[in-house]
Length: 90
Ligand code: SF4
Image (cartoon, rainbow, N blue to C red; front, top):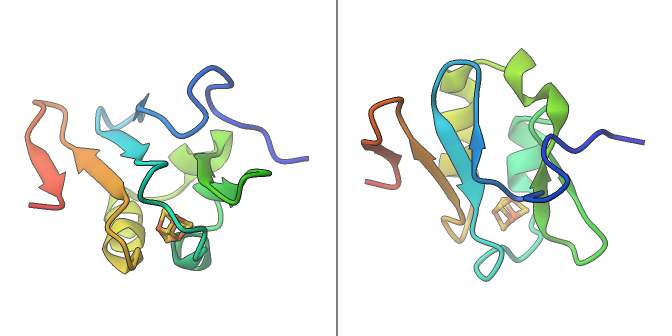
């Protein structure tokens, strides 16, 4: 069973080791799983077919995590840098 990073906030916001913050807008997520295809270490779908963030997300690079957010067809993944500046979507 994949381990969720934060059981209380499965879709985030999560603060990564890099200091970046990431979350999935569950109202927008349609379970397309494109994000998982790009970053299988970062996400898995829950029972409601919404993306949740895995404990292994810190094993992926921030560059690839940003690519996974860009790949989401409904722009449901939001990323901020360590200073709180929006990285994606701009
Ligand atoms: S790609 Fe977007 S819509 Fe699809 S599961 Fe990931 S967050 Fe949800």
